[in-house]
Image (tube, rainbow, N blue to C red; front, side, top):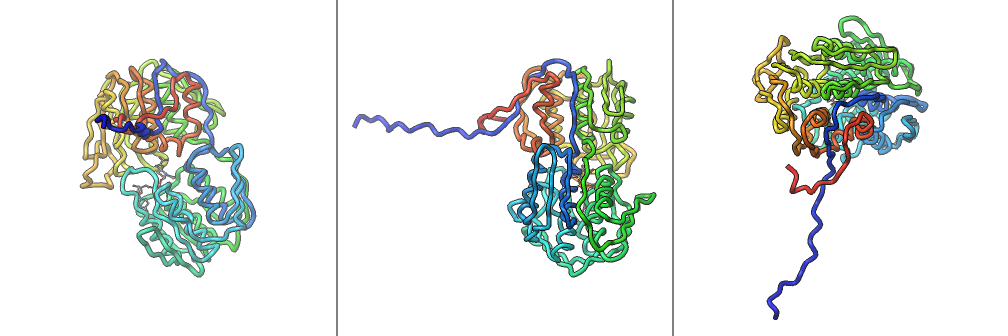
Length: 453
Ligand code: EPU
């Protein structure tokens, strides 16, 4: 015996995908946004209601579209995605059960319940997922579906539903929820009789869906004071729609220019979708050039601000994290109060790791009454801006927080390695290419799992 231990091949170290961002000065140039993540998937679901195929164009090339298309395929629908055009033929629908493997992938399955009940009389959808930004219950959806005649059982795996014939009802939402409004729209249009929805969400993506359903033959009235009235019809046919631009992406790229002292011109998202974003940034000193087809922003110096998120037409919650990233580069104290979600500051510790001076508060620092009184999670932040940021290794907690990291990394000294980028791939259309075209040094890499963070 030589005493030597047999040599073993070294085990391959597990790696995880990451983005490596190295700042390269002010970001300048043009970005074209596609249709919005939060409208495209709902249009795909609406196509389930049509007796003929629907065509949705200007679709973003994002993970959420693939996930939703695969859910529809699992139900037997034919879905083709080519060059940003989705064609959905639901005449071949053969199942009313969305497989459990889609559990936790996004927020879309719950929206399929109404359409599946109309088509088949039964439905199973796995538990909803999406970003971890608070408890995100589905009680408004379930209550609305029950009021319209669905029998619903919540199981460990998801939601089982049955209905012989859904009927119209008078529903008042406790809060103008985007998803619950969409559930009522998608369910009411083929229900027997009239549905009156009060305290409905009026986000542009919700109205876009209502207009698409109208194109399919639905009888929908948008009344004042958050009321929607739907007269049920016997059948809907397929329709075609060119999706409107993603206002979350548009705002985020405008901030990319501002946070680095550059100027980004965003194409494909109309001014009317950005009114509050533009007025808020203008109040901070940004100067805009707005045309019928594009919006650009630049600033010599930005003032701090106090902002609270709200339902439309307020400052949207999905603009919150890019804005907080921007606050870190505005001299003085800024305040952000989140009122839509219970826990949407999970990205803040990573910004602090990059040198941002941010304090989290559990009490509301704004005028809107909090819906989360007594919550243990922070609802407000105070940012001491004007401090230099530096690169760090950070992990994305949710899609919008992740984009804030890229923005901060673009304005920092040194490189930042961002893991958990699957969140970003689920919701942004070709972000690496867009940032690179603006001059950012950004690339996809693989990093060893153990070495990171
Ligand atoms: N809520 C309930 N019960 C429900 C439904 C909602 O309590 O049954 C509460 C939520 O917990 C939240 C508030 O109502 O506190 C608003 O939630 P909403 O239903 O409006 O949100 P959602 O439909 O789940 C969509 C977008 C979000 C966006 C919000 C608000 C999609 C797929 N998601 O979510 O987008 O922030 O509306 O505009 O459309 C994102 O894109 O990053 C994102 C989170």
